[in-house]
Image (tube, rainbow, N blue to C red):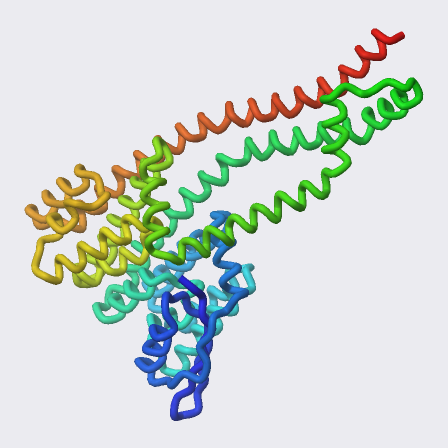
Amino acid sequence: MAVYYYLGKNFKGEILRGIYESQEETEIVELLKKKGFYPIAVRKHPFYSFLYILGDIPFDKKYEELAFFCRQMAGMLQVGMPVVDCLSLLCNQFSRASLVKTLKKVIKDLNRGFTLSEAFKNQPAIFPDILVYAVETGEISGRLEEILKKLAVYFETIAKYRQRYKSSLVYPAFLGLVSLAVYYFLSNTLMPLYTDMFEQAGIHLPLPTRIFIAVAANFNKLALLMIFVFISILGLRHWLMQDPKIAYKVDKFILNLPILGLLIKHNNTANFCKILAILLSSGIPLIKAIELAQKNMSNAVFKRDLQLAKENMEKGEALVNSLRSSAFPTFMLRMLQLGIESGKLEEMLFKIADFYDEEISTLQQRILALIEPLAILFMSIVIGFAVISAVLPMFRLYTVF
């Protein structure tokens, strides 16, 4: 996926501009034509592409804000407030300037005659496809408030998982900072004294101490190098994952990893069930719901499986049969079959999602239990090496004198 900047104009002279994430430029051109605009410019936007690379790091508040937005919007619509007034009030509820600016663009589009879903579709950097199509269906069916509440629950769940990931990194990050503080203190106080003393005595410093001093002397350069390597890895990953074949192989390998693979499998399964349940309960046809769910999968294996399932369903195959050769767990497929047979597919999908949410929580606790001792071990090695580097010269001086 690449991020494109587009600029279009209609016969009234109105201008439509924005950014859109797409695989091909032609998709954006078609989108503009459907809206009655002819394209003036469509080009890749490198700045937003870079932000999308950094967006792989799950430390943003996008889903928390979307959950809050949907819940507040549903509440205000329920009491009969006009959509434009709802959005105007919500502009004052957010501190992020880019989000406020986006909401103002949505209000502007509504005043120009766009529907709410069309206005959301013009801002793909903020509003995902699931929200756009669910809102579109809600506008047609008159169940917009109900759909927004379900979307709020969905985004809250995603935000909750991301918060857990962040929380699991707090303790290791704290230990890392303590290790760096100890390292910095020793390298700037004790080690310079040792260097002077040993030079005056004509004695060589022990090897661990020399290594410690060399690292300390080049600490700033090493830190910059690590940051550069980290950003380069993110950029390389983003570039490689543009190729569907490479993305599929990488994601398939990750799915086969012991704990992480199971976590990703459960996460995609729960996400699929939630999205499908929300879209089906909103009145979106099954095949279209599968297509939208496929776009929201984070793993290329699940994306391909759902694409194949959609193609098979278009040929007349049943939902469960089209998913049998997929990466989805057998338990989920059996429960889906029961839901179809009982005529309560949406309800069953929500139950399956709840089950896998519990499984994800258990796996996250196991990962956290594994991270903590590893972080302690890392800190022990770093501080232990620093202490040895500081103590060894004292013993050498003692043996010499």
